[in-house]
Length: 54
Image 1 (cartoon, rainbow, N blue to C red):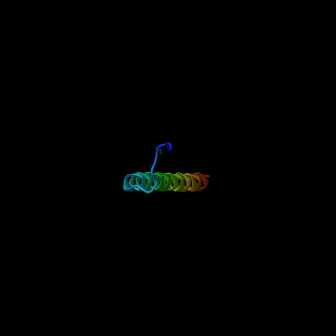
Image 2 (tube, rainbow, N blue to C red):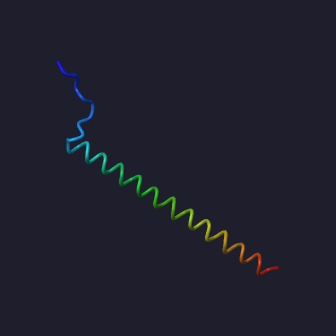
Image 3 (cartoon, one colour):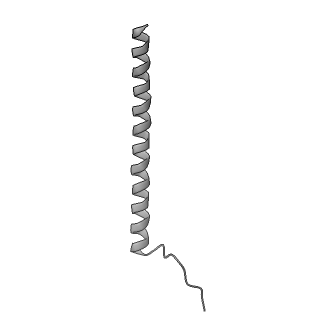
């Protein structure tokens, strides 16, 4: 008797879960990149303000 597979990559449910997980990772990655840019921009602006004061 052949062993049963835990995952059936051909199944629609597996692909739906895979696509959902991939989409969530992409969304989180976009948020992280956006926040990094925001923090860097804020830091640069603060630096310019300090330079103006001096």
